[in-house]
Length: 391
Ligand SMILES: *Cc1c(COP(=O)(O)O)cnc(C)c1O
Image (cartoon, rainbow, N blue to C red; front, side):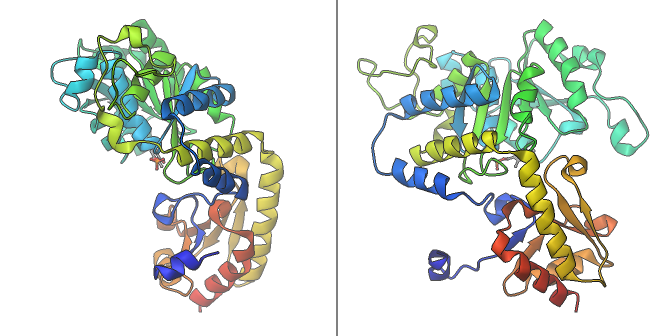
């Protein structure tokens, strides 16, 4: 099963750090793998396939429309592009040079993540606003309506919001001010799953576009994601992602693409470099259906039982704590208290097999076992490796 990696001389790693992109993201279920293999065996019209994806994504998220992208980061770039161009094909052709039209995306200081780059890659210029009082521990307020109003200019194209459990309460304020000014709100919800209720939550709160990763908790192909939201914006994103080497006479775009609204047929757009393949589209859709149908409580209970077992195997000498899903906001995790967490992590990663734990709270003296991408049959080996690393 792992011969392909062995043949390439690449080590298989025990991943108890979560669905990290650098470790290959989620592991896919057999049903998803089989769907991708089946998809690889026939030709289809990618526009028609994306239209089918839109129906499934709409059903599950409540969005007007949705497309499969090559990840949440790509979805953010496409969202920013769509917000700037709408159906204007001259603007599509100009990107990433966006100097001639509204190209400012408002991004609160507290929402500035490493993924802000994905918005900027569209050609948009980020404009920061707000305060980081809460982040410094000194303040209690989130984003306020007046500071959004003050940041609007005639060049404002969109508002970007990086969702997390703590800031979701600010979204209604953002939406109500932006609606008044007809400014689309783009939500980065890449890693806000589970809980699966978040597939609908940000759209219900009024976001115009939401980006999700397909290769994290959804369990789809690593290089997949979702852009869901307003039909016109999703359509404008799609047309900038498709192969557009087409004859105007014979091109038959899906309904999602409003041909009447465009002055002609656009060329390859900004998103052409991150095209979603038929295998990713189909794999993502099958994974999404599975993820939406899963029983969160039952799967969290099963994960907790596994973590209890791992804690027991690690043994008495180490202090561990199971943090339930209700506290992590995602899946249950096992916290391992260590004097030198990063030194232990380094030893684990250098071991045979290499083992990865989450270093997210290393500065507070914890390594975290996140079971999302850990195969149950590797639980015992993980505990052994940790015992070894602790000497
Ligand atoms: C993972 C992540 C992304 C990027 O997602 P990909 O699907 O890997 O492109 C963007 N934003 C946040 C907050 C993330 O956690």
